[in-house]
Image (tube, rainbow, N blue to C red; front, side, top):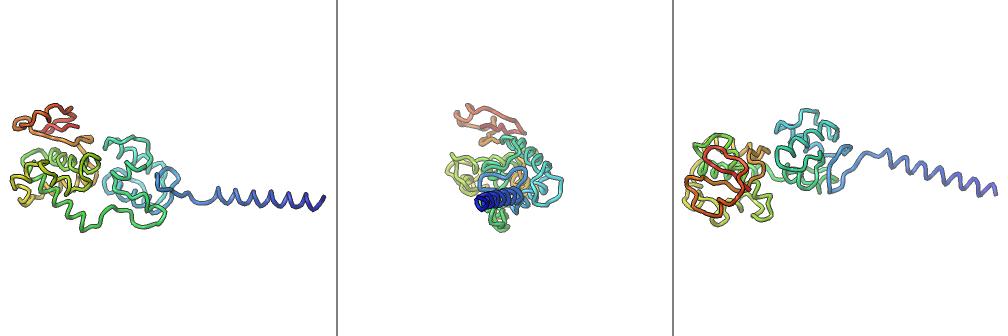
Amino acid sequence: MNFIVRSAKLMCVILAVFFVSVLLQPSTVNAENLTVGSRNDAVIELQKRLKQWGYYRGTVDGVYGAKTREAVRYFQQKNGLAADGVVGPATAKAIGLNLNLAKSGKSNYSSSSSSNNKDVHLLARVVYGEGRGEPYKGQVAIAAVILNRVDNPNFPNSISGVIYQNGAFDVVSDGQINLAPDDTALKAARDALNGWDPTNGCIYYYNPKTAKSKWIWSRPIIVVIGNHNFCK
């Protein structure tokens, strides 16, 4: 009888130690989201990117705390996402963070510096061709529309694919895409890639003075910047 009692007590101790060790383990993240309590390299990359864009002013320490959550919420509000402070698939995609790499500790940037430079230059060529002479905010908005299309399942999933989609942009058909962009267009492209979206998620824009498509006039206008109407 004493042996049975001792065995039962020992089992209880083992179970208690097991559950305590589980509770004391550092927080981990699955491929679904980053949230308060997360600690890994994915959080470091998240904080770096949000800090670079001016959303986060805390320490880059890899700990998803209250300041990181508020920075994420601010980014979500600015980019038309559900402002829940959680980095799920949609928010991660908008930020350029690969959640599937969260466990591996690898770099989470979605593109290399060389491919990013190509994206900047290609975006800037469209901005220059479509929007030179427009207010700076309007030039950023043109680039943002292209990026919003990349994220939309109804359009190609790459910047070059969106830009060169048949009939999508006049600058491609009339050859202005080949003009060298100025510094303002390059800066506008970078600002859009860094998360600034003055259109709040629009995927179309047009100049009402020159637009010939009757269909485009049926789209709900979200914002007017300079000579362009931006719509969804």
